[in-house]
Image (cartoon, rainbow, N blue to C red; front, top):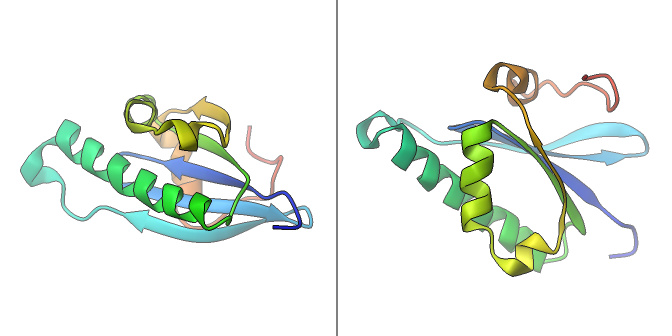
Length: 119
């Protein structure tokens, strides 16, 4: 990879978005969601979704898709992601930011604001 690439994972309990910045503009790379988690309970559903997210991120890291990662997540999801992170993944972690679920909705809607405009 010739240029350093930083990805941002924005994760709620059942929805997530991965974005990056290119030439000063944010770019949504993909969104992910976990279908109906009601049957297994919130905690178990969150754990399952966190495993899905980490699996995707680990695969992308191994392929060289990004060099560093920033995670923005609700408190419970951030804790779950920390619990399951592999040491190889943790080496790429640049920052973790805990946000209230309501603060994440602007990102998870698929409408990315420009970098630096969200406070």
